[in-house]
Amino acid sequence: MYQLLNRMPFYYGWVILFATGSGMVVRNASASLTLAVFIYPMSEDLDWSRTMIAGAASLGGLLATVASPVVGWALDRFGARIILTGSVLVLGLSTMSLAWATVPVAFYVAYSIGRVIFSSPMNIGSSVVVSRWFIRRRGRATGILFLSHSVGMVTFPLLAGLIIKYRGWEDAWIVLGALVWILALGPIAGLIRQTPESVGLLPDGDQPGGVEDGTAEAAAAPEEPSWTLKEAVRTPTLWLLALATGSLYLLQSGTNIHQGAYFLDQGLGVGVSAATLSMNAVFTGAGSLFWGWVVDRVPVRYSYAGVALMMAVALALFPMADTTIEALIVASIFGMAVGGILVVPVVAYANYFGRQSLSAIRGVTEPFVSLGQAIGAVFSGVIYDVTGSYKDAFIVLAILGFATIGMLLLTRAPRRTPVVTEVGNP
Image (cartoon, rainbow, N blue to C red; front, top):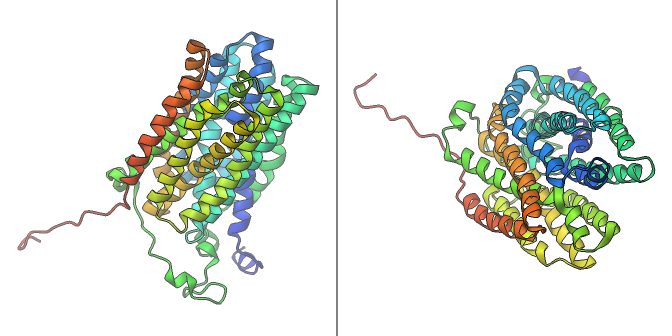
């Protein structure tokens, strides 16, 4: 096995990226943009409110806050291949079961299970594996990984919309669930390996002695930090990153799941509403690549503050978007920012704390993401139900986004406190 991988004409990390990317594509079966396509037909067919449907995403987010620490531990204990393979199997089954979830309890159980898979094992597992296979190219590789997620963001809602139009929302859930298995089960079960060292390779495809592709580029790479979970939780940096990331995901969820309905309320029509969702997804992919490139060159805290600024500006513009061009522009800016919150925090955790305990560290911080998504989805829905408009929700979310910028600028690479031994003591 080792000899085979070493003789490959390209670094096996790119195969890892392909395999994990397939999982990122199919996790969109439970994405908020996909659920947004189902809100109208399901609410009309089943006489459910928007808040009730969005509440399933919130329940899944709350459950993911409990699941994430366990998932982080399990990824280190059993390996990403086992955990991700099981996750794909469960995600496909839970998605298909939504076709028969015609009472709220059944819908909440099925969708929240998928949402836990979306938020915890698929997200943490895929990104941690990529972070372990890449160090110098971590930003670019992570950007490509979340570009895969964006491909799913575009195709899954569009496919769901087409199937709903011609076959109904029940068949749409069945097809999406089947696609989860078809696209991801083989690559994840057959190709993923935990670390490059486990198969006799080095990160980034470097060769022993610090020479990569005939250059000395690898020799200039900074020494990688190595923090245990116990050490990391004692640093302010970890909790500043976790809180800021949770805040930005609150903004993302509070907008994504209601975006399509908002532009319909603005009188822009079904076509424009669908186009804004597509533009959001397309520019999330572009943003993943862009911010992946930026974070490899600009210090993490400045890169992340830039992401927060872009998101806050987009939210401030949403209430003013009442024409087709304005709606498409705002959705595009927002999508670029979403690409940033997918990529930059993943790189930040790995750059600051290293690869040794990365799954466990991500596991204890990911509940902030899940909680933010849970609060955001319900917050905007409640504001709509009370006021009849989403505009006040966007204003509040924009203010929170600007406040998050300051929080991110306070983050620094953590440093260990030196142990001082008194003279004369052993």
